[in-house]
Length: 250
Image (cartoon, rainbow, N blue to C red):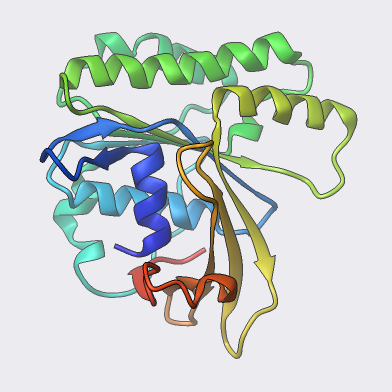
């Protein structure tokens, strides 16, 4: 798996122990970026990767259906992986809250990863800090409930994508500061200067005190392939992955 997706999954999904062949739930991860910064693409790539790891299904929450599946070839778009991704489209904040509150009643296999795309669409304008805190806490509680169902030594991860504006008002800053208390691990995405025929992003991962910060260069080729390499400042690190790729499209 591409290094940035491995780190995202290890933080937002599970971290494999070097001493024991078990998976422990990692801290929830907040994926931050402006419009068109590749948040949905990375979420979907994470869903495909988790679906291919032989664990439980992936629950993908978003307000509206994806316009198209990632282009490309290979195991990433294996129909068996796609079948393990359960899309649900709560159209409003009320429906999202209902879905999360009734998660303990859901039948079928327990999800190993919960993804929420477009958190900002559920943080309605008249919501204050208390309501935003309630939604964040409910998301964490849902993932914790699934982790309890899965059993000791494993867990259900949580990755939430939030669109941020470059020039947000004081209310946006307060809301982001509040959410960061619930999601200490964060990955920031920033559109960078594109290469020939490519769309490029800079991914900066802050694991919330669980390790060093890291950065990657993410490029989307015209054919939809997503390539990931360490940011130049890390290129000389012998422990860094020198480059990898995953199928996807922003």
